[in-house]
Structures are given as C-alpha cells and as structure tokens.
Length: 233
Image 1 (cartoon, rainbow, N blue to C red):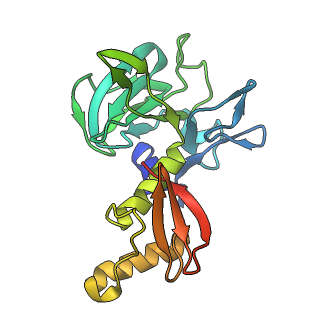
Image 2 (cartoon, rainbow, N blue to C red; image 1 turned 90 degrees about the vertical axis):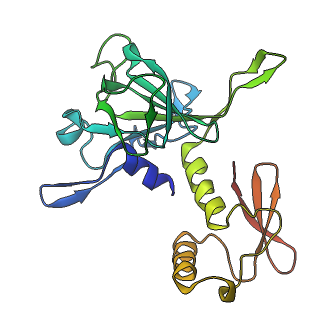
C-alpha cells in the first residue's frame, strides 16, 4: 500500500474517452497542493486530490464517487463541510472534506475503497464554495492525560504516511537495525515481489540495514554511513 493506492481508494481510476485516468495531487498557481503547500500565508495540512488533466472541467465537475482511503470506523461527520472522518485500526484519523453528498453514518464500519459520498467542493456556504476536489487529511490520535485531552492530535503528511507504511509493511515491521531476510528464507514469489517494489521505489540498496530513531527510519550503508531516512508510524 502506498500513497497512490490510497488515492485510488478515494477516487478510483477510470477509462475516459479511451484513456486511463487516475486522480493525483492537484496544482494551484503552479504549486503542488500537498502537505505544507502555501495557502493564504499558511501551510496546507492535507493533500488536495482530483482527476488529472481535467482541472475544473469534465469528470471533476460531475460529482464522481468518493471512497474511504482506509478500512475503519466512521467517527465524525460534518455535513455543512462535506466532511467524513474514518479512524483506522491503529488510531489514525483520515478526513475527507468538501463532499457534495455523504452516503455513510457515524459509528459504522467501512472498508478501504467503500463508497462514502460524492466529490463537490462543499463548504459551510454550500457545494460551490471551493474548487472541485477532495481534501484529504491524516491526524494522529489525541493525547489524553488524567482524562483530559492535552493534544488533539497532529496533522501528518498523507503522502509520507502511506509511503512509510509501505516501507514498514515490506519489512514486516522489523525496523530496529535489522537487515532484510536473505532470499533463501523467503519463497520465490514473495522475494520477487519485494525485489520489484524495492527497485521501483529505490527503497533500499544492496547490503543496507535499517535503524529506527523515533519516527525516522534510517538506511545504513555497510560502512556505517547513512543514506537518508523515511518517516514511519
């Protein structure tokens, strides 16, 4: 599972006019509208998504169906904003905003990709307040001490969240300076999948190991030097 897979759960890829189209992070005034993009002097704490190549025309204006980015439980709905919050099994909250319509109820389970509503640009003043896109946020669990909420949770980059989850899952959660298993310990199909994904994403080089420090996972070369890091849950 990576970020593009999560986007595909939200807005499923479609064949339109003979071409395969998928949703991507949008651009506005030449800037990619991902996490920390500049918005009215503030940093954007989400990723804005719609179908590539249409802008504010075509399928993006026809209220395409929106799915849940993740399996979990509906924990909040704000109809005036077209907002749905899904809490996953690890406690992360996934919020979809600006839906034209909502097709789920609070406290009910959903699965990844399940239809939850239609895209629409809704805000408190109606469905046409914003450009046609899906605003996708990921928020950590609230911090509670002695029954009091001391931190409502932190916004994290959805792209880094999903891509680091892929990295984590590929290595079966073994992120404490443990090398990948040698091929002899894996069945060939599994090894082929790992090799393909690792090469495609340039995740880890030959003979490298992993070392976790907080939410950073460092790639360690055989000589002990580092080759960058990933953010991990």
